[in-house]
Image (cartoon, rainbow, N blue to C red; front, side):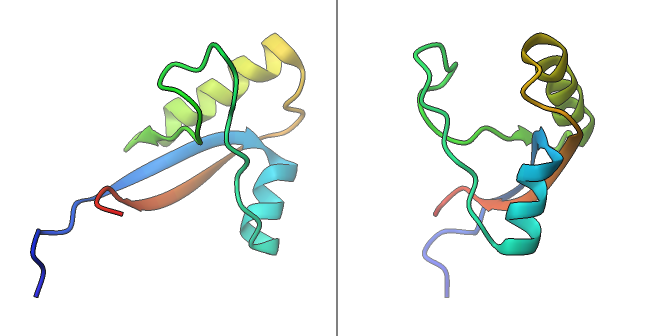
Length: 82
């Protein structure tokens, strides 16, 4: 039995298609961000319950930085207790 009820959320990460392919097809991990300007500190960022916003963020990064060539979104079930 659980000592606490599980608390799952759906998260969506906007990224380049090449990153998507490595994570989904090759079981690689997302690289955590380690920038001084990261909103909530170092880590991997997900938009909660909002794949559209993750896609829009990736589009913004594509326009602003050019690092993202082909926009993709990775979805994940996140256990907040883990």
